[in-house]
Structures are given as structure tokens and as C-alpha cells.
Amino acid sequence: MRLENKIAIVTGAASGFGKGIAERFAAEGAKVICADLNEEDGARVAGEIGPAATFVRCDVTSAADWTTAVQEAVDAHGRLDIVVNNAGYTHINQPMLDVDEAEFDRVYAVNVKGLYLSAQAAVPVFRAQAPAYDGVRGVFVNIASTAGIRPRPGLVWYNSSKSAAIGVTRSMAIELAAERIRVCGINPVAGDTPLLKRFMGEESEEKRAAFKASIPMGRLSTAEDIANAALYLASDEASMITGVCMEVDGGRCV
Image (tube, rainbow, N blue to C red; front, side, top):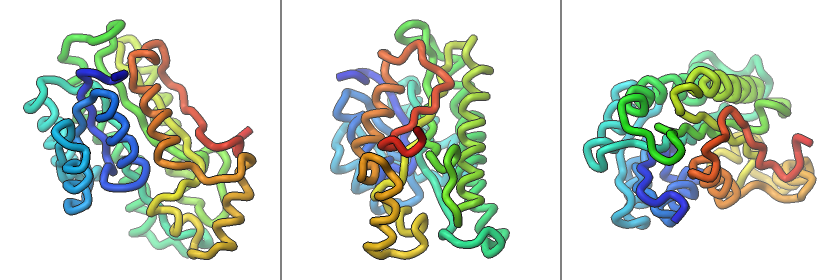
């Protein structure tokens, strides 16, 4: 029960890493707002988790949707302790000049602007509420990527958006530290999620094997791997940790 009595929003909770994080947080005692664009799968995941979870439709590129998600947490539970910015998007693996402007805008809107909008909605709530353990008022956990520090070819605009996410995480951390609002990040290596096919550019055993071969420990990351890291960073055990961007990568970035 490492998150007992904590209230968390997890974006992109309908599948992949977000689903794993929402499930683990609930198992550890948190009340979880499962936020996602996919209403059918998001509601299903929340229903499978049970009474500890609530689904809210949320497009992370929409300020209004962020306001709704945060208000849902406050109205239902009286406070908000954790925001996990997990929702992400990538263009298909291809030469950089082949990515059109609309696709570029979408990548940056989800992966970077979404962090800005989450801060706009959640920071005022964190500031206004009484601190919890060790004086901490709230925690952001931003899911970035090893692509932001060790980029792969064919993913230029995705790579750079995740570099920006890492920069946002560290910058927010230092600005908000005096107010006891922690901001941490996780840099997963490629994982077996719905985005993997777009990272690879094609679905084939050869491509999958090539991605695995780039990871010294010889396997892709899993939702459980990322959920375990998010659990620690969001928990009271990490009350002195802010600004860290933890690689969960099987050694790829060593």
C-alpha cells in the first residue's frame, strides 16, 4: 500500500504503459483517474480495476479536458497528489523530411504541449492544498523516452519532442522545488505497446529483433517495468527526489 490515500491522474491509461501504471497504482492503494481519448478501452480498464478507478475522457492537447480531469479528482476525492503524463504519440519511422506538418504538430502537441497544459491545470491545485508526507504538495511523473537522449534514425521529430519533455521535467523541477512540488521523469526504452509498430516503421520479426538487439539486456521494456519505476517516483519513499529522469532501458543508454 505504498500509495495509500493518494489521488492520481494517469493519462493514456487505456493501454500500454498507462494501463500498467494505473493498475499498479490502484493495487498500491491509490484512487486513480484513468484519462484517455479512447472511451471504450479507457472505461473498460477502469472497470477492470474496480472501485479505485474512474475513467475520464481526456485529450491531453485540450486545456478544457485537463481542467475537467483535475476537477474530477478534486470533486471526487478532495485533493490531487500525482499526475502521470504518460500519453504519447509518434510519427511513423521514416526520413525526417517525409513527416508532414500536421503530423509534426500532433507529435509536439501530445508530447510537449500536453505537459504545459497539465501544469496549468494541476499546479494551482497542488499549491492550494495542504502538504502530505514530508511537506510534498504534489508530484508529476512524466514519461519521456530514451529517444530523447539516444535517438534512433527515422524518428527525428519524435526524438526531439522527448528531448523537450526531459528539459521540461528538469526545468519544472527546479522552479517548483521550493514549493515542495516534485517533478520526475522516466525514459523507457522501446516497449511492447501500441506505438511499437510506428517506432519500427513496419511490423516484422526482423524489425522487432533489431530493436531487441539494440538493448543490452536483450528484451523490450514492459508496462510492469515502467509501472514499477513510476510507483517509486510517485511514492513517499522518493520525497527527496526531483528533476531525475530515470532510464528504464536494459542498459541502452549506458
